[in-house]
Length: 342
Image 1 (cartoon, rainbow, N blue to C red):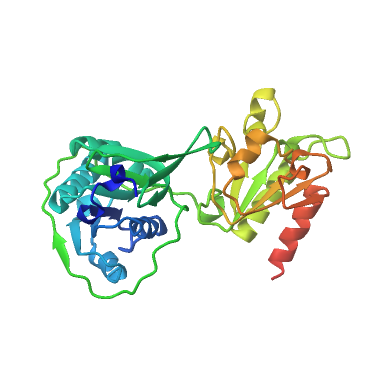
Image 2: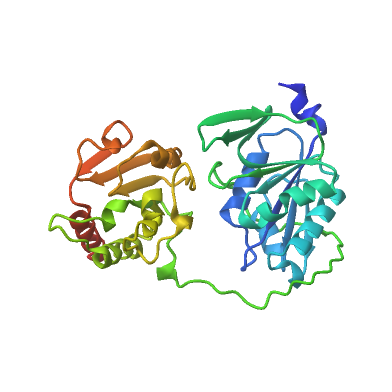
């Protein structure tokens, strides 16, 4: 064991911070963060922040935590930098934590560096693995893997969702210790606007990632484009399968070429070297050529399949487990019909 990681590992105080969901429970990323903390030897403390934290504490009562520290109140139910950072700082000081682990969600990603600065510590974000000898991170769009250590304490580690198997433990009745914190914020949350379920195209917890390429908007066998039909087929499959929608860069950039675009597609859906790197169990690429800048975003997708009319495309060169040489319009129309018939 590298002594630079944790010094005397028996002396580490490991704090896992988590926000409660709207129903008071803990989401999957929080359970993954707690599971990752078990790879480090030390005393585990769980810090919970939310409008009501007792349900969350009971949910993980058997996780092995020495204590549960909570910051509770209606002002902590919504994500705001002022309230989130103050609550995290207060819990970290109360726990005298040397290592702080948080799930790298949008909410924690906003405050992680600021909390570390308040504690005179250091922060590492987008961590993909935690062990007794350090952390693992990917660089250059997942082309280089780095293993790092730090002697600075406290050390705040934000671990990416999907990198660890979620915690499984017995529920029970947990004893919690409230931590007092006074906050002042000029931001007031007046409501939440969210798209309808059928309009939601990015679903991180979906088992299947469906990726559309520029071929959907190109001329088809009859010499004409069929963008409205393509949009109908893609949305029909997404609604039937509850899969998550990804896109190649060429498709989201196609509006710059003066071509028709899919109305529900944006750069938020982009997968690849300049986009996101999802971690779905399965992936299905359609009308994509399987070039390196796109497929690098599939590094953590376990099973890859593709549909293309070109048997010599990039997906056929060892990048896909299965390649269907077929018309994606016809295939996806048939698959959606089979799903609807279930």
